[in-house]
Length: 189
Image 1 (cartoon, helix red, strand yellow):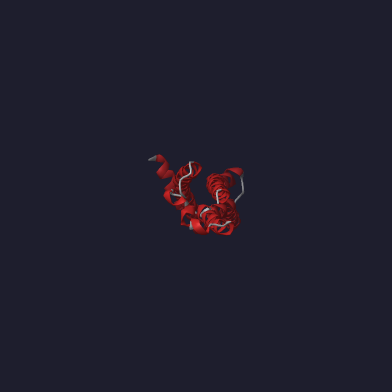
Image 2 (tube, one colour; image 1 turned 90 degrees about the horizontal axis):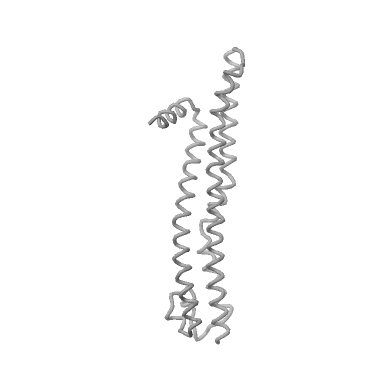
């Protein structure tokens, strides 16, 4: 309960720009986790299906009897070019969300820094208008409050970058499996 009161106190003292920055970063944070959970789980299920399809092809079963993305390719007219089209489509689908995570990871620190700079400028403007002394006891609390935005920006960027790498690795694993299936199909032609 005390932390909620502390947050409310901080937001009530903050400027509109700081509140917008923190809201923006909060939205980025939620989007990052949403992409992670949806894409990571979806890719894991897809990888499982493709592993089963690869095993089936190795055992000599027909492609249409599998759950592979390549089963949509007509087996009687199979060619490297057709398989490459399906692999390309799978790559596009498996990497969706990566651009958003990259944008979040790269812009969050700057958004937080923008909030910090604005807060510090407002602090100095208030000190200049007040005509009072600028002692450390007056400036330190204002600057520490302003640095919260930078901390939030970094806090959002780190998981977004990590999630980007995790999903990119899963997508690579998936495409490698599909490529192996394609190679097997072409070699058995």
